[in-house]
Length: 136
Image (cartoon, rainbow, N blue to C red):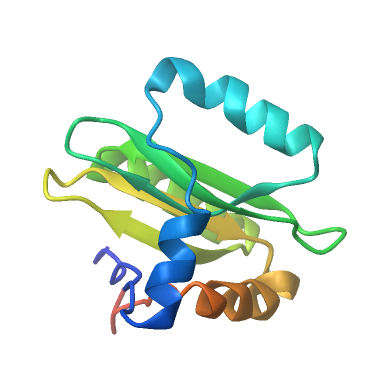
């Protein structure tokens, strides 16, 4: 299985919006508390990045009611592929994918009926959705 092409971050006005909307870079011990807090507020990650120092940051959004989302950050390619296969089996779409310079994967999958809405929200932040390569 070929890996999908990662999301691209665009420059311009969207870059300023994106940079002011990211969470701070968080260490692993802070991630669970931060994501649990945001989840209780009805917010989930639409995009995630992991730095070469193994810090993670998110862009959060309030998804449409009924949307189901899976977020995995700081994973190896092998771990990513396992999540990708499981989500494909459920019929979920890979929404966003970041691969850092150390080949660490961070991804968001979403239930298919809310994919286009999520893609439109990514566009506000100047982020393209992950793309399947031919034959992937």
